Image 1 (cartoon, helix red, strand yellow):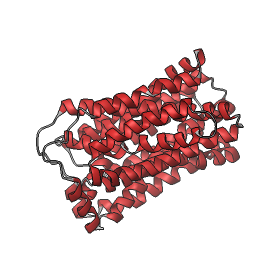
Image 2: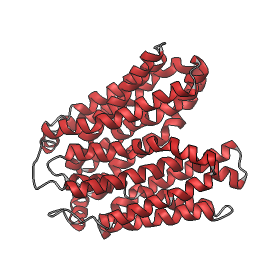
Image 3: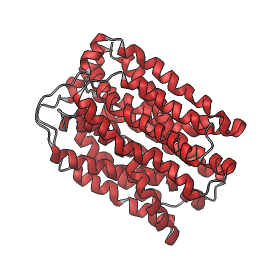
Length: 389
């Protein structure tokens, strides 16, 4: 039965990625209760995101050398503990340290989790899309779950934030007790690594990350201005964006089973460019339809990046997972300040118009990629996952 392990992994993935969305939620409370300025709190965001993306490939290298399924619950506990301590330490240095612990926990989790997901699902597109979906849902739930808690209890309530990590660890431990799962996550070395194709794929991941983070940062403000919405209405646009992301992630695996992952990626990025153009230039409420199109199109390739990267580097599956998952969030975060500066000097419409170019370039780069030799046909993957469920 592969579906139950996939659901457990997806749940664990969501519990970890919840913490990637928690740090931005904490920022206003750190400013209000401790008087940190914007420069100080930006250090917290960098500690959580940049450190995670730098360290994640290192954990990928380690999991390529040794099978470490025990790292899944350990990293979850470390992530939750770091977040829980934020409200209990007083100095800036200690706060920075425990937030860094959270980032390291996130970094330690993903490469081994992606290896385990590949083993459990057989690398099937649908199974990997469910694994990826867990992370997206967890990230999106962070403000919904955390903001009300902190509004009532303040930073002293952060110890309660260890609960999602504990739940994630508990649902993951049964996987570690499975002998078949432990053997499946053992290091395998088959085929030659294609670093050229993996480099192009990495560029695609970076371009998608910049577009996605740029959208989550500015699309609510832009549509709020164009449609004269309240702050609540502008925030509701993000619900549409995240909802489209959920649909797109699930569609990606199923479409890849039918049409192949590279054709699906190319069409998705072309559709994302079209959606961004409509969102940027079409007036009135119709622009919301283009938000949905863009969100779905950008999310369709997410899980496909993971499986394709693993197939390009069959001897370094952990490294491939660390890079594709690590850059999926961090690369866009690094470019976001530059997009903000561009918007300040020009307009948000110029920012979104600039983003149109990025999925178009990603589409062109995807056109230069080919499926690795020996990659399992999509129809076979579909039958394998379906029959095992």
